[in-house]
Image (cartoon, rainbow, N blue to C red; front, side):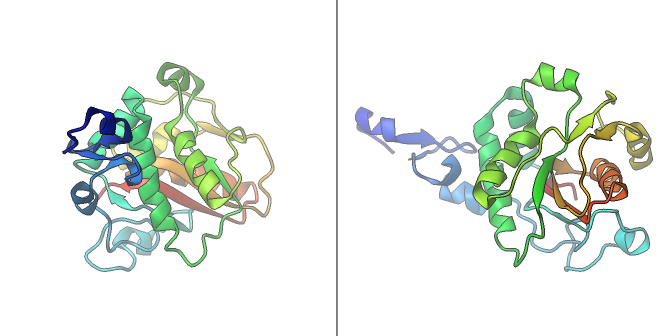
Length: 229
């Protein structure tokens, strides 16, 4: 506990439990809360679905997605779902920095990231105007500066507004996204990392990945904050 009022200038509160932590503490989260974040230990090597042991999930064995792999550090559930909701819908950018830091640490464990550029999943202009920002761009900017990879925010646009995906089945999600995205630049021969906050069924990143591969991209990966189990 900080007793000296002057010392409070150099401290802040843990984003999860409210405990006062030193201002230089990583991402303003206390040690105890950081240790208990629901990190993904074992997962599908293609779609990052949490699994009991590392390998390929049944779906990826039968019908693999067009992207080469998905990288995600966290399981989507409490408290991660609450942090992402605060980040996206309440403009709490500190939560975005915290979660982006988790993704960055996961990416740095990779021997090779195999990416030439980062491309955030776009929002339709109406949703972006209402929200004030695109959360995928915020994540992408954090990763771009840390990994020294270019971030392209204008090459891919969402031209058709679509209903929220949360309440839809996997098949409905795929239908919902048809012809929703347009590519406005050449990606011939490029290795692209798509950036998003959450991958659930993978419908969004699959739709965009197929679009990029059809346009000549060499490979596409999906990098996200959290994966739904």
